[in-house]
Length: 427
Ligand SMILES: Cc1ncc(COP(=O)(O)O)c(C=O)c1O
Image (cartoon, rainbow, N blue to C red; front, side):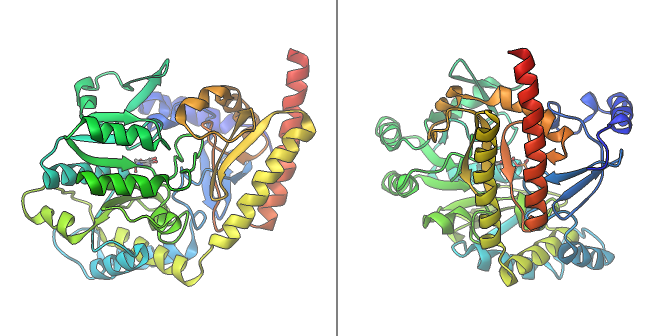
């Protein structure tokens, strides 16, 4: 880190607030530190004040190959000379589709889109059409996009719409269950015969990176089969990240439909809905899914380049080693400074907060750890050149190596020393 001032970022933010609500183009960015970045390269970000940051947010996950990965961007730049969208097929679509399906391994058809939010909606619509039922099961603490039927917050342990203007009755479509609780799902199926689908983040990366207990996903699969419901994996975070074939490969459980996004296109905006031919071909028999920019030339080029790179040089062992060491170091450094830093999750996507180090398995247990205190500490981390999300998730990329590990450990050590000084003064 060459400087700790943020004067230019602050000036930029002032102007931005005149142009766009809150100065940002996604509500997720409203909270937390404001930094205006000039560029990203590999695992590093550079802001307009001349500060550098080791990045463990990766744009909320997409940059699995690091920022501006040359292997991806060169192909996108070359192919974009063809144009972008033609309102018909183009020459890269089949290659992208074949590579995608071959990499995922279990699915027979794919539709490309732009965001995870819309692909989740298409999955739910397909499930309703296939079963003739209306409702779906989801789990407390998962995120499936920002639309009315899936956007929730939890107030005093009760699920509520998260946005003003949201049609609250759309949430009536949902049965909310605790994650990792097979008995609760059995009971829901026993009591209701209108469950079209069970949608699940196979790892709850949006809630403390809680992992599925042994056999949980198998049981969800078994119950969906028994009750004729569609099993949807929301692999927007886990896809291509936890394994080349995503969570379906890692946990050995095959869904009926799955939604992908983030890591599948090296930082470019692409999502995908994939599944069995029987389900997906309903898109030619009455179920609607559209999008002007779906499967654009740059999108297909980005998918082809990213998946080719991931297949030719799988980074998963390196990422696992880096993330595993980092998780251990975070715990050790916290202990050395007397700060109760805790981590849990997978090395490729783990969660940090303050509090009781015991692993938590349910969203409700988040109350037992100090996520708010950690969110404040993130400002200290950012001031010391570590870019992470206030909500606690740390993403590791293929571009994180020895240099980044040394830098983050050094910077975390200094940040914790600063945190300890503040705590001492306050105490
Ligand atoms: C599991 C999951 N599903 C869906 C979404 C929505 O994806 P997008 O932000 O691309 O609309 C996200 C976004 O973070 C996510 O984490």
